[in-house]
Image 1 (cartoon, rainbow over the protein chains, first blue to last red):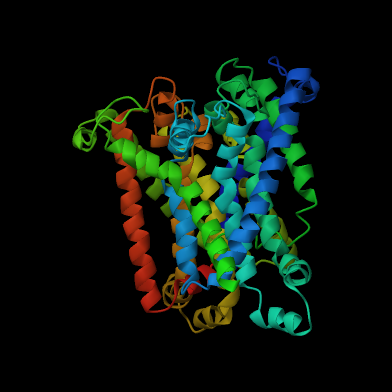
Image 2: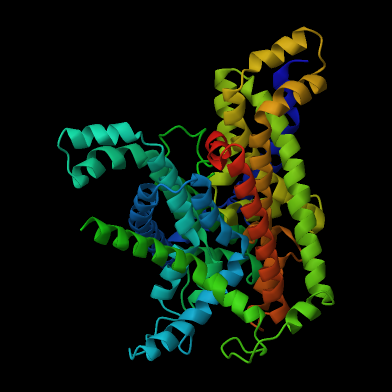
Length: 271
Length: 267
């Protein structure tokens, strides 16, 4: 038996449970209840409510990705400069929070940020006027950045710690300042790590509905919330499928420019 | 001047860690709080830990979550490892095609994957434990393949081929040649699959149907009426168990060869 046939169970699985479901959702999106063809479910994305939700989702996801990049780079650089004895320990610290159920962790943020919450209590002790961030965009953004930040720090940290120390030394010896070293060496060489971080932050941020559910206080509608309600409340599966397909295409287009890099090695970079 | 810079760096890292661990601290404190209210401290108690194991619903959800996690991770590890072995032997073009398809569940939004699976399942099977299990195996396999593949590329596969030429069966050759060399990648894949399965909410939510609950979906259902305090106790326990396991793993593997090695090579 040739070795490539070992992949047979996997190929069957992929066709049965990855490709066929995608075809099914496609069929659902392009048909009505009676099975006739229609564009209306796909075009529903341009209705004002949906368009607005999509725009908000895009804005939130871009903002969240950007904040994560800005927070992750200093963190990764500092972690590297402390030269922990073992890289494994840093990764351990970053992965560990993921083992507490994420819905509970987001609920904890609700308690921290709420009007009578822990943050305002601490601020009160310091004599600072209470903030009212709960159920706002700000709270939603904090929750998103919180949830996705490790997925940015890990690949960026991995990429940065793989940079050869000699390259940096050489640049320094040739007279480059810290900024020049960052711009000319560290940033370009950590680019692949950052891009895989972008994929792992942008896609879930763009499509999440649970965080908005909890921290947006029902006032904030992201495209994920609308799709979820289409399936679980309005029970209009065709419309929900149509919106999902539109969302999927949009995400794929947004990612297209980051995907030129070698796809095979993506995804495991965080480990 | 230099030390001031280091102080600043330490403060920054401390703030990031505080940001990441603050909610966990809140949940741990709540698990010892003698009050059903989420905002008031009513004194220290262990009663939620005591009543945890007699709470039928929570225990049921825990059982489902664990069976799903270990079951789907094990199945994904077998299918994924065999898959990686096979894919690695393919010609360049089919290799590219299969690897692109492998990336679909990772790149695609959870909500789309969940809905697509649900719409597919309702055509031929009832939604329930079985459909959730299939869904979890489906999104777990890519993580296994992506963990195992780099190992296979770095190990000398000709040794396997040589063993086969010299008359070793494929099973014998796998256990004696491939497993010892790619073992850490397979283990990393299993662990990652387990993590993904235990942490998943969205895909489970869409594929589970009525009656089946994992810890995630149960917590989601309780958001409006209030989380049972026993849930905080359970999460704290699970967190503590994982903390100890990972810490031991870190210390032990640090003694022999560094964890870097495992992390490094599984990438």
